[in-house]
Amino acid sequence: NTVTFSCDCPAGNAVAGDFVDGIWVTSCSACSAGTFSLIPNSWCQNCPIGTSSQAGATSCDCSAGSFIDAFGNCMQCGPNEYSSTVNSQSCSSCPLGFVPVNSS
Image (cartoon, rainbow, N blue to C red; front, side):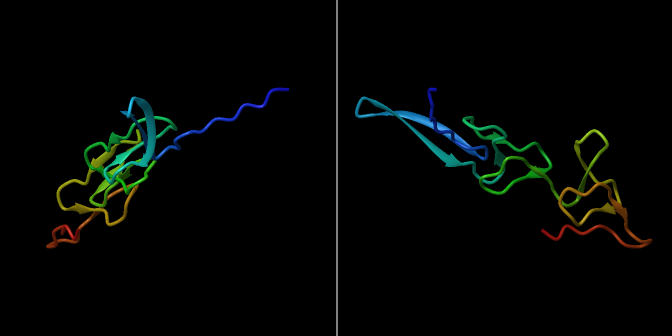
């Protein structure tokens, strides 16, 4: 039996390469905040509008003030509605006379 070993740049990181003194050198570094990498050995992608991520993320979160709809899309809450948690499944209505406040 032949055993093969290899090294992967894990999801949440980006592979980069460059010539250094005539030798191709690759590196693996964490995706920056606001980007993500879903699969190993790939590049970081920007999070879709209305979403965010921490450094080294494998996905983006639906921000407070938004909700995840039935199709998995991150949607902004409607007028006079709010969501105070990340990846909320719905928005709540403000009581009569109150308005949503952005506390970020």
